[in-house]
Image (tube, rainbow, N blue to C red; front, side, top):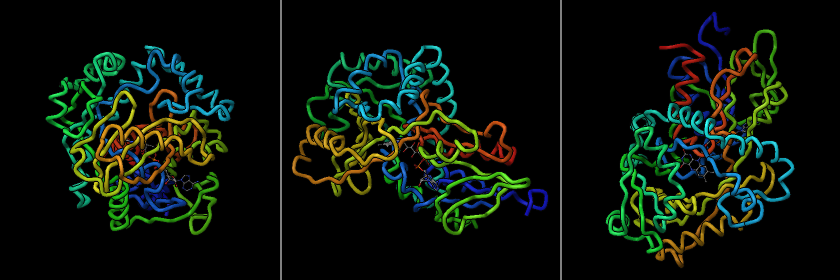
Length: 405
Ligand SMILES: Cc1cc2nc3c(=O)[nH]c(=O)nc-3n(C[C@H](O)[C@H](O)[C@H](O)COP(=O)(O)OP(=O)(O)OC[C@H]3O[C@@H](n4cnc5c(N)ncnc54)[C@H](O)[C@@H]3O)c2cc1C
């Protein structure tokens, strides 16, 4: 069926939180949608994130002063930002653009774009969890950012000023205030910044699965197929893929393949400065009641989340490429931080995970039509905030692809 004969045929490549949100939103507007992934929905980066819906996170990762942290990134295995020397040659072009993005004017521009993409994310996710019949996954109880002392907080003052400039007010707490909210946090943390109206998805995998289920129930197709190439014919796009998707034709293709999008797009001449920032989590199964909201150990750049299936401690940025196996030393660091911060976890066992955040140098996702490629759409580069921005990304793609309602 061609678009003139009916609803457009759309392939969405990648069933992470971004692709699945797009597929559902397109299907709800009547498009014939096939969601293609080499794995089960939600198995990529969207599986193991920290669940934070963080609209106040308007500061990009590359902030003024980032250059000073580069030697530590290269040499210190335990630094929250790490670049193994073996990967330096491949990472260098991206790293140079990343450092260049820390110019004040670029930072301001990125913050404005991020704020626009985050707008309304809390209400949108709350409504989506209700619509999917999983309201229990949405916890709107704020985020508590913790610092050892005022000096450590001062190091983050640029980020807090930017949040405030975009209307996000945080309440500053002393140790008593921290204990009133989260009594199990160790005495290391004496200063808190509390963003009262923030939220958490308590099981990011189950969220994607519920969304994929709703998409299938609405008549969407889900195919387990690895896409090797996208080819443009005269009238349509054709997938070259393993399994059932091979040879299928579509009027539009949305590339939402996370950190792997670059590989799919390069042969088409679409060059993205996309790099994986590998992140890790350790999860303590069954550890319930340790905290009651998202807690950010801001000095360590670590998020702690009270997931429905245990306590998750996520973080670290490792610029180490798509192919190398996880570096267990990185998750060991997270485990040590967790046990030191919550003494009750001292004897608890944990499982570990690594995933690929799809990151642009300026932290701004790439959402919209691929320049010069009729029917090709990009939805990637969501970096540290792909869960937060998934639904608004879907709205933007659907609006551009199908037009306003
Ligand atoms: C430790 C950690 C903590 C995080 N915490 C948060 C948080 O608290 N809040 C937040 O908003 N964000 C967070 N993030 C970021 C967030 O998880 C990502 O931005 C988001 O998951 C990206 O989603 P995606 O759908 O683009 O990518 P993915 O989830 O990686 O999905 C891409 C999919 O594409 C598929 N694919 C790739 N290539 C092909 C191919 N050739 N053929 C077929 N399928 C293909 C993959 O199998 C995968 O399923 C965190 C990330 C990490 C690592």
